[in-house]
Image (cartoon, rainbow, N blue to C red; front, side):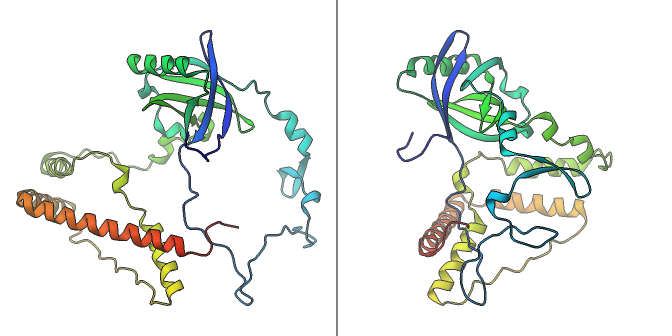
Length: 301
């Protein structure tokens, strides 16, 4: 793994009678986002967080705090830190593979957090055997271990030269889709409306490339910070234009006509348009980068 990045967890992976050392590294991070501190308007000083007793309104220091479970309104069972520690499952630091399954068996609504799974210096051959065997068999692995003080189920999949391990939500943590959609009317779209929708979809087919998606909010924050530092006028928000007409079929016809017109344009024109868009994206990226560097505060309190 890249130097400087610290492993989130180190242990072993076991499949059959084969075991070897591995490490987990966070695959996603929010550390590069622009963040702000809370400031006292009157003094310009940073504000610190304190805990106040809800009844006496007196300050409660950290050493006087503990955890409690509410059983009735305002009635709590107190649980001490030592009792919490005794409830944590024992860990043998082993990701033990329980089954190999088709990747499609796990609905991605159960996906929690992704981690890169890498071997230690002595486990390269066994790691590669597991990775390549899973690739050839087109399967993923289900494993369980104690991660971050909790027993977790992990989905392991081949990913480039390594493996990616995604912690899974438990069934009780995933809300029922039946409840979410229970008020949806039973509609079946047919005829011209369905044909127009399919046509619009066919003209917009592409491939997923995360590099093409800009974090517009982050870029706007960078522009805002940069403008404040340089004493310039703040960027004005763009006015939202409400789409017309409200009639769905007419809107679909209008969209299909626009798609067809765009598809009929000469390739050279399209290429030039893409070039312009690319330059615009690059300019925004540069502005965001410069703004981020200029920001005096980047970490939240």
